[in-house]
Amino acid sequence: MQAINTAFTAFRRSPLLSALSITTIAFSLFAFGLFGLVALNIRDALQRVSERVEIRAFVADGTPMEKIATVSDEISKFPEVSRIDVVTPEQALERARKELGEFSDVFEAGFLPASIDVKLKDGFRDPATVKKVADRLREYDTIDDIRFGEEWIAQLYKLRNIAGVAGAALGLAFAAVAIIIIGATIRMAVLARAREISIMRLVGATDGFIRRPFLLEGAVKGILGGMLALLLTFFAMKVLEQYLHLETAFFDRRLATLGVLFGALMGLLGSLVSVGRHLRQI
Image 1 (cartoon, one colour):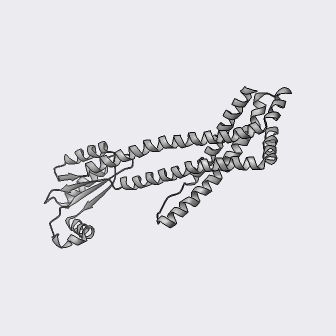
Image 2 (tube, one colour):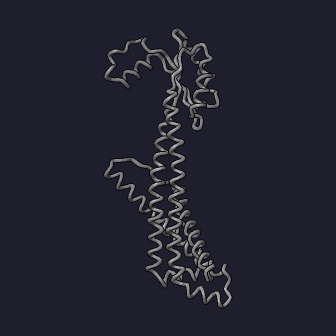
Image 3 (cartoon, one colour):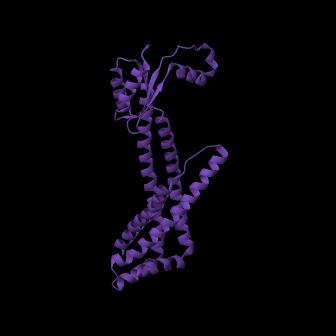
């Protein structure tokens, strides 16, 4: 309770310094939030593209529909498969005319074979798994040809890996910079109260007792800064949507809460480092 009173007393004593600290934390987290928002939308875009990964197995001419249905039922039981779509020659012709409208006059009835379109579950769309499933499909004598865009899937998977590694590295870099800035800001507050800390040490206050108000103050500033950064990020997203005509996803409630808690954690870490360094110098 004493630590809480001391922390809020510090806010009242130096409102400008506290406002500066919160604003600095907010803008540090705002830069981190913008990067996180970009990373989130890139991930969602790649996820939507990966959902289009499928294997198209063309059926041999003359195969009766009963046989195709039997094979489709067997394939649907593969652990990697989420859905099976049987496409008749008529449906294939209609789809081709719809997707390639400018060439619709070159398609004729019976020109396209029936096919079994295999959709894969999330987590089973990497190149190795897709190729493994395709090889299993080739074992059926009713399957005449397999198409799944092997090269395209390999490039997509490589892009996802690069985006993941780059995102993690840049995220850690932004977090480190934010912690340094927050630590420097809180150190200003510590230096402003250096005389008070010295007196507390003289009357026998322990380092833990001295640290607690600063740690609490850092956490509160981190929370307030995190909330402000969240509002700034949301406003920036709306501005981009309006002027660039983009449809972007924002952080869900869980990610927003984690962002604010991350601000509190960085405030704590910044306070811990700054106070600890100052106490060692006294």
